[in-house]
Length: 134
Image (tube, rainbow, N blue to C red; front, top):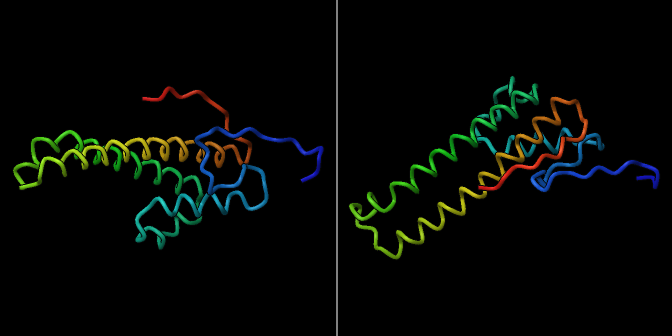
C-alpha cells in the first residue's frame, strides 16, 4: 500500500476474516466468510455462489434463525432441562453457554450486515454506525 493511499476505519464489528472493501480480493474473502456461516449443503446452490448479495442475505437469515433458536433454548432451560434429568450445575453452565452464544451471534449478525452493505455498495467502505449493545 502506498503512503498516499486512503485508509479506511472499519467498524469493530467488521469480520477479521474479510479484507477491507475495495482491497484486492476482498469480495472473495467476504464470500468465503459468508459461506462458512451456512450449513455445508448450501455450497452447491449456484444462485448463492454466483450472487454475493443473495449469499449475504441468506447468511443474515440463517444467523437470525440461530439467534431465535438459542433464545428459545436459553428461555426454556430452567423449566425443561430438569425434566430431562440434567443436573443443576450443568443447567447453569448451559445457560452461561447460551448467553455467550447469543453475544457471539449478535456480533456475527452485525458483521453480516456490514459485509452485505459493502457488497451492495460495490466495494465502498461500509458506513460506521453506532449500534447500541444489548
